Amino acid sequence: MGAKNVQRKTNILSVRVSDHEMEYVREIMERTSRSASEVLRDAFRSLCEHGDQTLAASRPCERRH
Image (cartoon, rainbow, N blue to C red; front, side, top):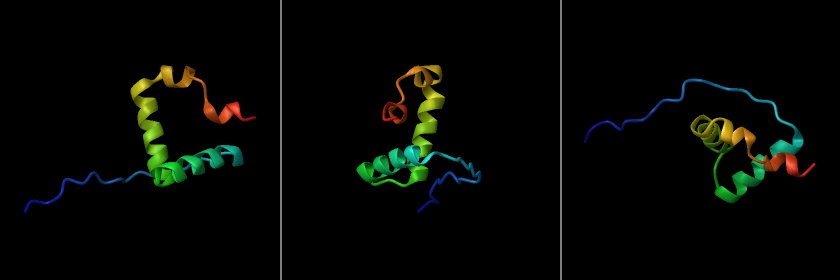
């Protein structure tokens, strides 16, 4: 058997969010059974892939204010 090709995560990104934003992240974590890191990595990937389209789209966290 060969060694698994595992991409190592060597960088740490620290982000401050409001209580409201964190609650939104927790809701996603609960619905998807994923960690905060996984949720935020996917959000970052989506931003990288879709660029300005993602930024211009309606932001669910802001709708609840």
